[in-house]
Image (cartoon, rainbow over all chains, first blue to last red; front, top):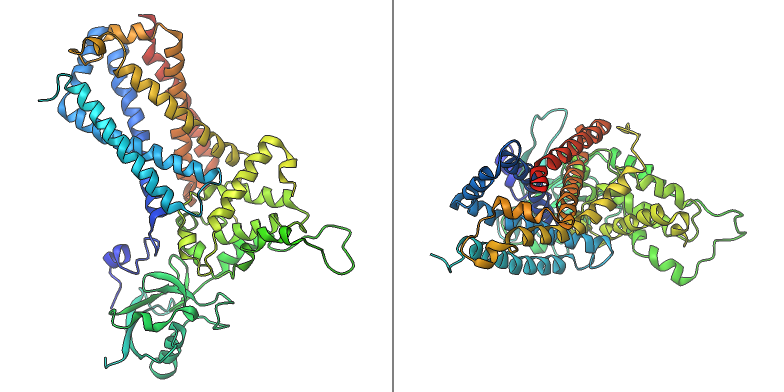
Length: 138
Length: 245
Length: 128
């Protein structure tokens, strides 16, 4: 029996993933992916504001703000909040390890970081909701 | 398969003959106290004489028989077969992302090259004492753990940065370096720091903790690497006295 | 011994790592101020019925030196952290380790160019 590429990727004895993909590895994968997303976002953010700022006047900036409050952009903002908070909280966990704190209890530290992010994400989403619908929703 | 037998699925690969690795199933009758290494011997002696695997001490000291057993990196000589009874096929494959010499034996050349780069030997302080270097118990404490490393290669084979960056020293070599760095008898901490502080040294560690998960000796290479990172930054900020022991 | 791909730098790694942590902490602070100032301060936030940012409001805010410092400081930290992070990602792979000088120079060029772009973007708000 040959090893299929599917098994090579996802099988129990996968050659592709580390054989013990556990907490720390998942945290790192998430950190790296969110980091790359955020770098892309920064350039997108600059590009968006530059369309309203370079060469034109105030009306185009207001128009841009009008566009970015459409549901699609608000949904993207929701995702952005999740990504930023995950990256920040996991980054905080990494900084703790760099200070020599909690290395032996990395799984507990990860759970704590994720608990804090969950609270912050809920808070962030409520804040966006409040901004988009200042009169209490609907 | 009859009663009392465990089906073991071994990844076979002969680089001179095969294009791709393939899995082969053997049925091994469970005996009391049988380890995975015993089971492999059972196969080698009675079923297929061409099976290749590496072993030496059979007691978890030499670090020759590290392989992936049931989806987890373990030492074959220290893993009991009885725990896999009735759990379906037991998958056995070589250490991941290593060059396979034959079946379960992988090529350790690159692994030991990385170890050699960190000067894995004690450079004593001169003048040498007549008998031995005297150490207090509390001076010995920091090296109690890293000295237990048996160089089985599990950690470096589980580290994704060691897969993709062949220059990266890897957890085993870095912990070896740490072991001599914190040794009070050693006299070249500056040189050791210069080696581990390079781009392919400690800075490639992103605290994935894969090495900690797989270590059969329950050591913590990540902690050693983190301590060396702190030492490196202190040395850059405060100069040489940061390395004083 | 197998060949070593490249004689690696003994300086950049430590500072890159240290600045990455430093900029991370600064970024969290800047991000808090940036978001609060952009969305929860000013006239529209008080009246409550106009949630959008307006041009006048932003340029009013950017007349204050504090917010100019915050915005440009944040941009420089974002670029430091983001591009340094990209460098870390790249140096995990052999193909980029072999071209480490190119990676470093390329990221510096991208960083400085983006910084100038960012300064130009905010200029109308500061002067206007």
